Length: 338
Image 1 (cartoon, rainbow, N blue to C red):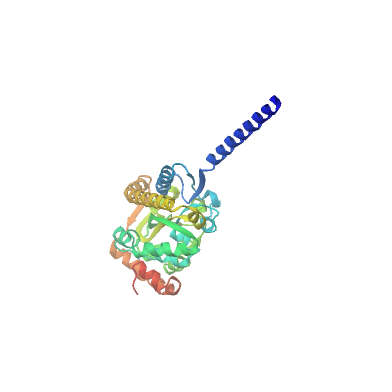
Image 2 (tube, rainbow, N blue to C red):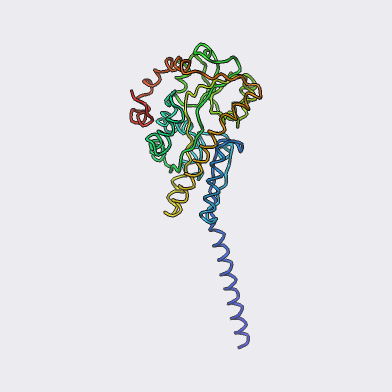
């Protein structure tokens, strides 16, 4: 009988240990890691949004979700378009890409970055892209139809021109320059209208190409230029605000569908706060970045409205050329009227 009693105690102890082990396994599985792909480096203002989103989600879900941030397009080996594809097919979980890159997969998104679409600068952007504007709603609609959920919109900013040949203040000045541009058809057409030799390449290759003289210049927002150290290998900048570039903060449809209603609210609130913080910081940084560029020897030409009008007149046909592809509906949502 003693033997049976001992055997029973051993069995009970084993069951208790097994239960304890299962409990530990269950607790550890409560923290789910989500991988977040970010195009830019740690020093970019984009990381303001990424880090704020991570912080709020982890805190408000009490650690049930852990967000791991991968800057410099690490998850897609530097290929930005591949990065968007990875979000849409569910390979990555959370993502930050500009509409200009996403336009390679949804061409209509190129409408938001058409030339001189927002003549009143941030005032127009805030009305149309942010604050529940028609443009912002259209961006979300187009991206979600491709297979992700848009959590919020941040700001990459207005795009400026840099080059190593000469100051650019007139359409004549830009002719003949070999300029790296984003890989979207309307920009190839636009820069050909300006008389340049447009080149498409991965942004990760741009610094070396400029340094070696394979290309003369490129165009990007201030922060992107600074984060990529482009100003270190460029002599001239033209401030012309020729195109605006929003950032889309998204999660894959797979992740979104897996969230409870409560967690969906947490993710969207975290994104709203993160994007608002990033936009504010981005705009505050612009003047600081211009000063930094000047201090490092870059010659900066700020175009007047009259000078900008000369460029606008040259590229105006690009709207009619891409009207069918971008559609009146999308262009109208961005504030453009034919």
